[in-house]
Length: 141
Image 1 (cartoon, rainbow, N blue to C red):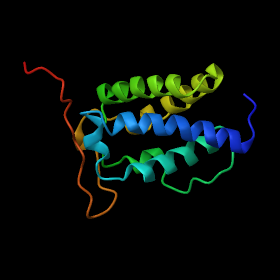
Image 2 (cartoon, one colour; image 1 turned 180 degrees about the vertical axis):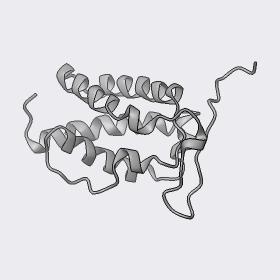
Image 3 (spheres, rainbow, N blue to C red; image 1 turned 90 degrees about the horizontal axis):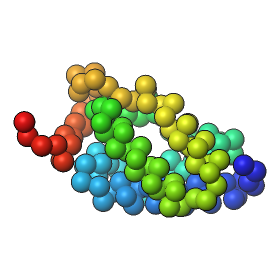
Image 4 (tube, helix red, strand yellow; image 1 turned 180 degrees about the horizontal axis):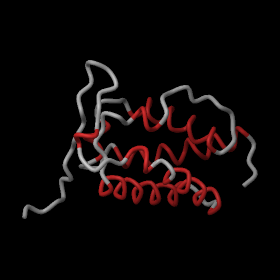
């Protein structure tokens, strides 16, 4: 994996765009992300991942743990998101090393974001609401 900063930024941005196009159409994940404009989250995620790959450090947002305090993400949602991410990366990228590294970086944040229940969530700001979106495809027991 040997890209110029411009090439890396372009590749990451392309993959991020494909991913968030899917996220904002997904019946589950779109409910989580409806509080943020797609172009904003794409810009933040691109900057974050470019820096994670060793490129320019433009990301100036919260850490993943702090950014997701108010969102209930369980293992089921995380796995659903990961499948969507991998599909998006394979659609947007041809460099298997880059895909593998991206997925490994992403998975490293699971422990900081996934929770057992919504009671483990907390507000970042006084005006925040806890985001807890049940899976729309679960069958009633």
